[in-house]
Length: 450
Image (cartoon, rainbow, N blue to C red; front, side, top):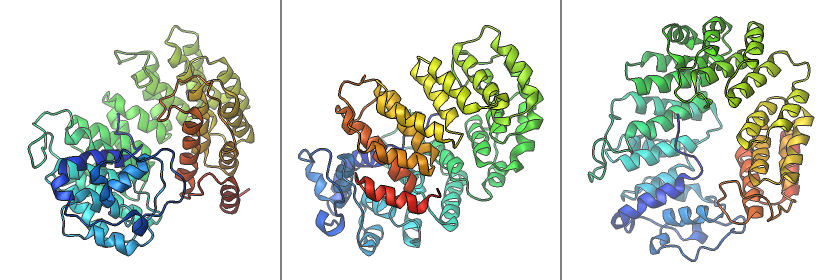
């Protein structure tokens, strides 16, 4: 399942706002100095900002897209934007996103926009919910409740158009293909309480929503879903394989093993084939009954990527030193996606050797993408050692001679990789110390155990 990227929903908002200029011109606005202080230098200039950028919403969008870090200083001012009677929905949603932790008016406004007849407003509100990472259990519960109500109140029929009729029925940007998938994905990462029972109660025969619910049930980690998922697999629904693996269901092993002998995908080289899902699930479950079939699988003719997944599963199941075995396997990989697959297996082990390996790759690889993979994996480890290693990379100067094999948002490789490091630190810690390694080190040492 592909979901809209979370790279920057503000860019999308800026594009959407351009279609509503007549409304935006009447909305409240603050000057940058009043409401939005700069806390670090921009990566590039903003001389090409449009005339609409005089509004607080477009100023925010343009500044964020050009590398500024912006924070509201006076939340009461932003509360005024949320409750503003004008119809600049984008500006109000942008302000509401800063207030959702505790502000009931901001929450009510986002909920209201989720039910809007305008698909743009609904999509933008869905993005606010997707990006919001509430710290308190109460905030998470509210977010989950708002998403569930939005998904099951009947307002998201396929082919919904905005109030100007710009999207005819059947358009590729369909409600069920955009915000619905986005919100189901957020439920899976949110892991709020008592979500799985609600999803099970709202199962329908619609194949799209049923598939999304099955996918989310595995990510929630709630064993209440096991009877349903086992029944789905017994009835031949291969979509249940992955969530059963995520839930480490040993009862599913005999049901999954037959899929090693058949592949119901028309593209067996892909990881999402039924055989690929079975290989991954067996590794996740960790049942020794899978070892002989996996060993036999390695001696048969199969696509290279499926053989790689089988080797990863066997290392997890019976290797005396998984880190050493995975490091050796990584050294065999010439293909960048395959190497990334091995790196992601390595970061499951909070071992100092993994941090050292990733740091070395980030500093010495001749590939921009391989260095980016190492930075991403250090981010996902979320350990003290991994975060301090990221901080150490802030002092690196990445050479311009690296292979340009990544999808860079800057032609300058050094700038691009430093952005990735900063984004990883900020995402994991929810702090912002810019490019100051000393402040980052002090905060990490104080908040992450040694």
